[in-house]
Length: 161
Image (cartoon, rainbow, N blue to C red; front, side):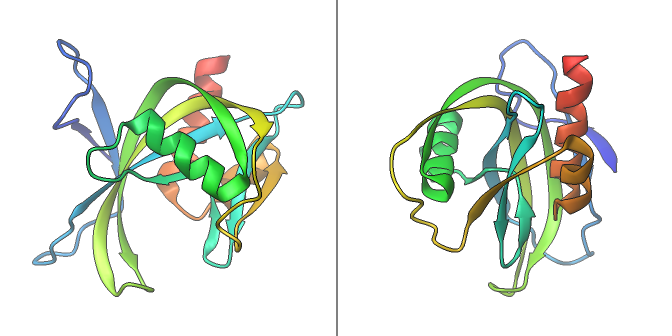
């Protein structure tokens, strides 16, 4: 884990620290892939995860060019779970250097993490290989595929105490 100043702090006049996970391979180009992710808890404090054939992830995903972070988060959660959400404030950001086996490409995922709550079920998920599951905070951290998402859960829970 490396701590750096966020190169594009979204809040004017503020300094935002970004935590980086993974180590880039020298000479390899890592294009940035921004994403927005939700920490959604039920009344028992269980956390919503999205289980796929590629692993277990926080609900959310990639931001399309020109798309607002919160709009992207709402779209991604709807596609993955069929639920609308109420999005709170962004509480953390972090990045992770990754290799996508399916694409055969390297990239740096930049995650913007938000507290959120489920609203109404509005459709069936359009991502048919995605299943929303609820896990305790400790189990969520054990099951998540990406380190930067595990870190985000720890940050969310530390901020709530």
